[in-house]
Image (spheres, rainbow, N blue to C red):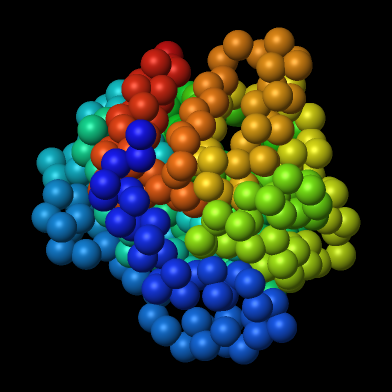
Amino acid sequence: MVSLPARLVNFGLPLLGIRRFFSQPEKLDERIAELRRKPSPRPGKGVLAKFDVSEDNSRGYPVITMVPKGAAESDAPHLLYLHGGGYVMDVAALHWSALARLCSILGASATVPVYPLAPEHKAPHILGEMRKLYGELVESHGAQRITIMGDSAGGGMSLALAQIIRDDDGPLPGSLVLFSPWLDATASEPEQKEIEKRDRMIAVSGLEACGQLYRGELELTDPRVSPLFGAVQGLPPMAIFSGTSDILVVDGRRLDARLRETGLSTHEYHEYHGMFHVWMLLPIPEGRRAIEQTADFICRHLRTQ
């Protein structure tokens, strides 16, 4: 049963304006321009009380590092977190608080790139920057201690990045975690239109528009844009979280099916009934449970050798 806090949040989701943003693609350029005039949020006082936070702008985009006060344990995980937002929206305050909750459970440090956004930047450039950043983190932390994870578009980017690392014979991270991942930029699955009736956050038309802005000269079916169409063999252990009131649950189910078809036994698929897009980032019972499941998954697949 969906908790009362989750039901209240779901009821109030339209007030955030995210559904309006994603359901009126003809106004997308205007709204993106408006977003660019706002400052990018940074960790708040609650996070700063528990973590030492630093920002590095030397790469041409901000990279935020969070380390537990007193320093992370030498064998603790390190999280590379790629935020969601349709590839066009900046990191949000809820990303920082959710990541802090997860890092606190794990005793982990984290790196959060405030990566270049579409339409100013395109998939090949953005993914190239994330691949370089991952290489730097491997030098500092060791690949086996790194978890690549993200929500929504960041979940899709996480899977695409892992596929790129595998294909160029790079050292794979210890695990992947995908929250409500957007994996198919074509948004062409018929079932999504039916689920859209109860999705109070995102719309198919908005996904289509954002995918076009992000892809550049690539086809929408290119795995760098839609990693669901890439090979899933040879990837690290993977945890996928989806909710049945999210049109992107279709992507999560399809990835789960593909992984099961290949016989891979190191992935987990968690589908929450009645839950909306990226609920796991919120301090509601279902969100806390998903964060605890994520921490357990990362610990079970952490390799420190």
